[in-house]
Image 1 (tube, rainbow, N blue to C red):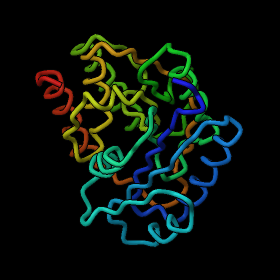
Image 2 (cartoon, one colour):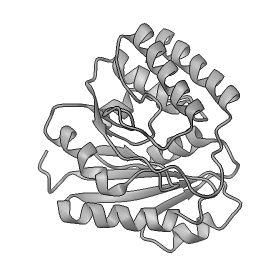
Image 3 (spheres, rainbow, N blue to C red):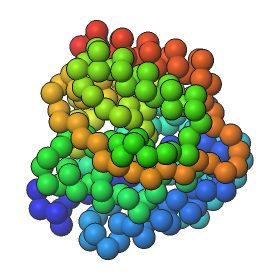
Image 4 (cartoon, rainbow, N blue to C red):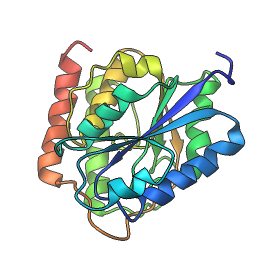
Length: 233
């Protein structure tokens, strides 16, 4: 497809991130403007109870708000349903992902060397500002995915991704929570799409707290690996 006709959809799930969402949107705009690519920013608010929704409304985005709090997976799925792009990108709203690195995820798709690009915090094996328990969990799920699917990745739980529309369309996603990244990866690999990792920076949040429950969400991630492996896509 002609690059002038191509549309990029950036889907940002939002839940109680009033202090960061405005800057994230502005930085996305600044990062993509020099590329000359057409894009849309979709913010899917997962029924925030702070001022996140109000802050997002102050920016030129397509904004959708869930009627009830359903989890990150529900937010992403709502955003995916509205996305019109030929390439779909996901990134977090807490500022941990650098919008300035968006071209690193997009260009492998444009150059035809990958179908799904994952921004990996661990690809260069340098120190990452993440909690030890998080790092251990990611390594464990990386190993399980490699055993079940045969795909080696260094950051299976990364939420910073870019994919071609056809990759998203075959997935029929079911996840409601943080396990959605795992479901997406397993189903993509099962369908023989090409998965590529690129190194990214990562900034641990400096305020508030993550909504991840390590025991509960870890179990759901494990279940999602098994069910996505066994089910037809």
